[in-house]
Amino acid sequence: MTEVHQVPRTEPVVRPVEWIVPLLFILVFGWVVWNGPAYLITLPGDERTEAALLRRYGSPQVLDWIALVVAPLIFAWGVATVRRASMEWEDFSVGDRLSVFIGRIAMMLIAILVGVMFYEVILRYAFEAPTLWANEMSLWLAVFIFLLSGLYAMQQRSHIRIYLLYDVCPRWVQRTFDIVSTLLIVAFAFFLFYGGYGEAAAKFARWETFGTAFDPPIPATMKSMVLIVVTLVALQAIANLIRDWNRDPGIHTAADDIDEDELRRLREQVGEGR
Image 1 (cartoon, rainbow, N blue to C red):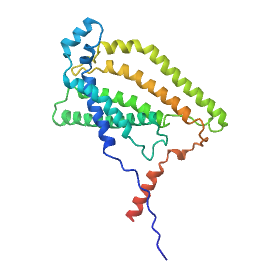
Image 2: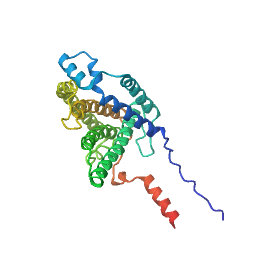
Image 3: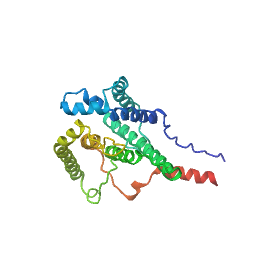
Image 4: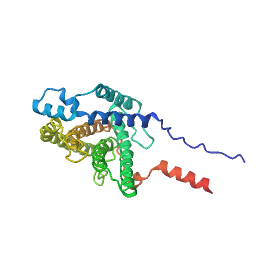
């Protein structure tokens, strides 16, 4: 008998550029954010606020302007080069690419956050020399991760949904549910933006900081980031509604939580170990 060898399905090769670009964007954009007051000084605004920022942070340097120009270019590069992983949602339009690249940024931020926490633990307990910045930096990174991950979860349709009633309804009723849920998301984003814009703009204009020894601009940046990300989530929800309008209704079971690729790899590892 002729032995038949099954050719295993190859996994998509992760290119280094897909991780280098998000990391590079984080570094350059982090420079831009940390030197945010330098840019605010050049904008028209309250003279007393500008004078206070100038005394504390100084005027922008050449490297600051280079970072400000390069950051959006790197972001565009990342959106253009990002690829869908095998376990990710199959749709991959321009808007989806943007959300997926932002998800890649969140993934790299998690690695950086772990590194910061590990560094602080080593210094605190091994050398008894804790830092003055690790706690606030961890908080700052965690908020960024939380917000950016929400947009990625919306694009991947991995946010919490209850299908008990949804699955037993006809397709036209399911579409009605989808419209209502999308309208609620859009309404939430609208009222959050409407109610929070004034406070966010004021904190950003005076570059409000955290008031600690490290003194990061968490209030100035996070208030604005919440409004930006929630708006993107609402736009992504609208895009999901349009793209999923003609999709066949799916039946959701507990098997949806099983990663078939992971199971296949485990079977191969068990087979090789015999």
